[in-house]
Image (cartoon, rainbow, N blue to C red):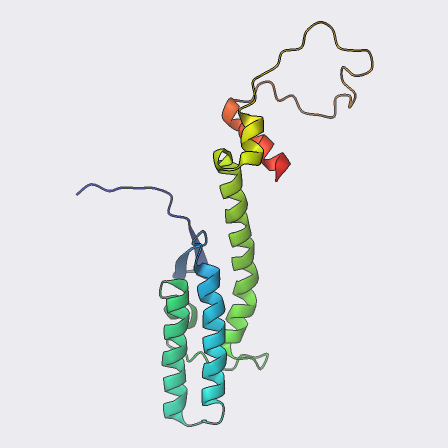
Amino acid sequence: MKSIIFDEGYEEYMIGDDPSRSFKLRVSDIGLLSRVKTAMKETDALLAKYKNKPDIESVEEFDKEFRAIINKAFGTDICTPVFGDSSVLTLTSSGKFLFSEFFDAFIPQLKADIEASVMTQKINAPEVRPAVKKYVDAPVVKPIGKPVAGLANPYGTALPDVSALTPEQKAQLIAQLIS
């Protein structure tokens, strides 16, 4: 069987520096944020539904339903590596639920990774951005004659020499500057 390898947009996350407790997410998935927002609403409703049901059966039902909502939102089983066999309602030393501690730590990292993915897509695909395309496709204009005194290098040597960059590197630089 032949293997096809390509960039699928995954980021891998590890819980507590334990490689056996890791999961992968496609942070470049356009629908991810929408599914996470929907999941947050569903888990809020779930909390309200089980608020006054402290019996063991209700706790187990809540745990099962909560895990299903979260795994569906992320498109993979993240609950098993994150929570293991523990209930998501386990109280931590801070007095918060285990699921709350996890999301307080994970959501800021996820947001940063999504933003980085979006920026990488913009930089690596300037041909789909008209604002960049007009600069990338512009013909190279060679100076005629000597530069006007005082304007030849108005910034001194503070600017890097970009003459050795490849056309692709120049396109990426332009995309970064315009973004």
